[in-house]
Image (tube, rainbow, N blue to C red):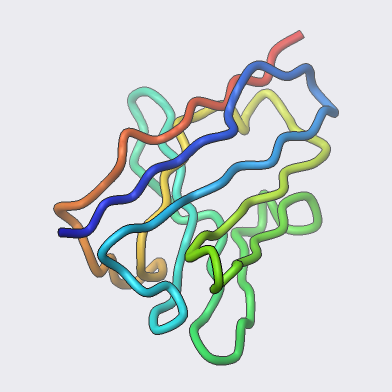
Length: 120
């Protein structure tokens, strides 16, 4: 049973920062690529940041590149998303899962997500 639990969201003003955490159970994150996704009301869920297995190489959507940083802690079986210079358009529910923009490994195991609201 794969369980994914996101945390760390909240209300922040434009230009502020947040650090999101994702804990995984029933899944060894060291053996898969992991990604952060976000979904705003009325919009598709999009991958925003990915960290690859083995290499740890990262990739980001252009609209977050230079502002967001994804990392992992294999010992804790967690991934993180450090978000800086937040913009109003970053407002969304943020989720984690194994996979990339091309493949979601556990499509039936989405967590509840964590709400990020950027507002003045």
